[in-house]
Image 1 (cartoon, rainbow, N blue to C red):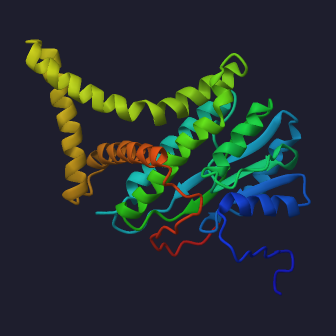
Image 2: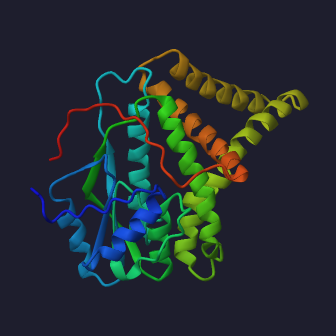
Length: 298
């Protein structure tokens, strides 16, 4: 009653986020859609900064920035590593946007012209990723706007964070199948280059190449007397050793957390790939615990 502009579209049956988004968009009356997550807080000028870009008819959507809120001591928790990861992702989004178009908006905050919305299959896991790239396939750019941002608490624990990452990775492999037209690079040269290099290779190739690099380097140490192979293998052992110390030693040293989160991400991708192959990933979200922050939106 206090907010008559808010329409509750509750459905008793859980059919997943994509089904809910389809229903909400069908009821929307505006020309521009803005998507966000229930557990994120937006800065007060977020929508204004997003709207500015739609004066350009070539822009089909806007990707906001995700910020992970720092929560007290991060020892034994994924907050700092998660925050560093999203700063890296934001840098990639800026580079992609400056080059041509963002390849996959984050669901915490992104926007789309309503006319470009295409109904999602209800089993879609990464709705935000698929929607933004489908719009880009139609010849529109998805631009990055860092002044529109969503703030979110870090995951409560590494176990909670890994559940999310495995789900996202499984959804990533599903998305590669759904967006297979983008692999035909001659149709969308710039978009396909960014998509394949930024997403496909990171999901489908990089984690497995890390395993291959470690095993082949170990073999070369036995088969060759070259100091180069011994040094490179020693560096790999040191890198993964730092990751283990960060995980089980409960250190607050950032230098150790970077290798750990890198390794954590790639292991999650492999587990997500196995889940995708087994067809065990549901489109229905399982609630993940988040740390408490007490921070209000600006």
